[in-house]
Image (cartoon, rainbow, N blue to C red; front, top):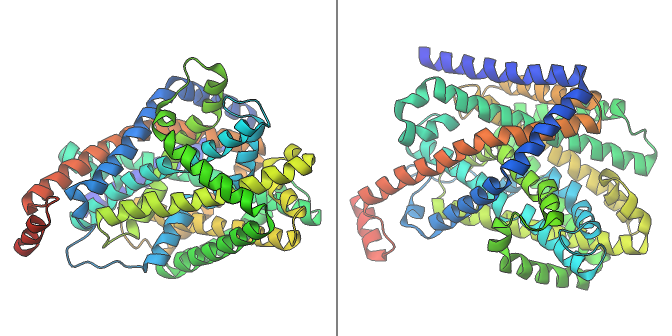
Length: 514
């Protein structure tokens, strides 16, 4: 018990101290803070771009290996454990926690940006359009979900099958031994908490900006930090109530609402948008994505300056951002995946969210590009208002904009709600049920951080925070490597002990012995 209290206080104090210092510096010296973090993040993307590309490819390959390995038969829990959530709700929570606001914010704006500034093609050409969708699929496809999956698998396996506490440091016991109970474990957990806070604060800031952009476009509401502060305050009250109500009630209901609103919006866009063109580009773009997956997973364009610059601005930048999000998403989806087999988990994580992302970007991206070609002013809009400008040119545009605002707010609440739960776990020694008080403390802190950074310089503050996310991702990437090694080492040991193989008869016999 003494070690428990010690670990709790260390992780909480150190992570709060680091975040507090950065927020104060960012609030007092926003321009300098943004400049310094921008320089460091640029250095990271240029120096370690090859490392990120190679690492993500290895992580994806490891997930595919688990899918076909006998290790995939192992359950994330005891043999008698059953899934806590219904499959539909489970998939909804997976998706909401992993992408949420990003899909709404970038669903149209990213393909449009790639169409106007493609990796290698001439702008606004047919080849540029093809590259726009292939690039969007890469950024939101298998790679980020593979990282989320590896982190979640390591946590769920060590916690539910091996009886460890729900801390990322404890997943490394097969490699580091009892050293995870000391200072090394505290460092690992502080990195996870820091990355979670940074990644979620970026999401909250982006969500507030887009809600403000929509209200400004639709109703003429001023687009400034004061209004964004009011938005954050209102949403904070809502997600704190959700956090207080508990995981099974609040997050599950909101995740189901997210899926309903997202499905409704997607169906309407398919109907009122260029339906045939959407379906054609979705099919062709998926083939292009899969056909070039290995090459684009490893291509850092050393001999193509245009693509190299594009990669640093988009793919490598995303790789760093997703890595910083992986502790948050990984911890959360590990918590809701008890009772699932490793194989079932990998299929779900690499399947459903990726398919939905491809459909989403096809529908919103193609509609955005097609509408922008007829109404060129859309191409000149900032990303936060682009979606509403597109809706304005479609049938039922005002209704679509209202649904989009509701969806952004719902994703906003779900992300923040999930984050308070994860932070509560990480600073309460991995408990599966952190107290409402702890979740509220972290919820208020997240809202305060997001708003302080908005006050610190608007977009500059967010840019600085995003740069910090990339910087924090680099040390945490080494933790992810150790998590893969630990999971394989422990899983393979247990596979041998149970006699699991790909042969059905041996599998049946092993279950009898078990």
